[in-house]
Every structure is written in C-alpha cells, then in structure tokens.
Amino acid sequence: MGFIKDFINEEDGIGVVEIILILVVLIGIAVIFRETIMDIVNGAISKIKEDATPFYED
Image (cartoon, rainbow, N blue to C red):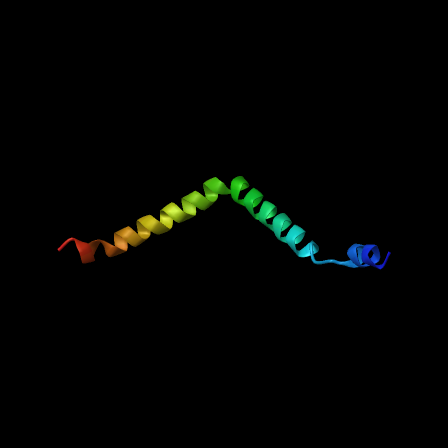
C-alpha cells in the first residue's frame, strides 16, 4: 500500500508536462506570427548584406 501512496504523491512527471505545454504554446505563437517573424528576419539579413557589400566587392 505504501508504494501506491508514494506513486500518487510523486511529482517528477509534472516537469515534463510543463515543458511540453510551453513548447506547444511557443510553436503556436510562431505559427500565428510566422509572416511577421519572416519579415523581420529577411529585413535583418538584407540589412547585413547591404552593410557587408563593401567588404566582399573587392
């Protein structure tokens, strides 16, 4: 009987569930805002390329 009580009171699995829920929320946010995120990333990459042009045009 003690084994069953210990099993019920054990909370080690809660951390895994919390991590999975956080990942699901982050993936959901990324899917919802994917176009905005892509615009920001593409803008940053193009700005980096513009700024680096003088270095590799030699």
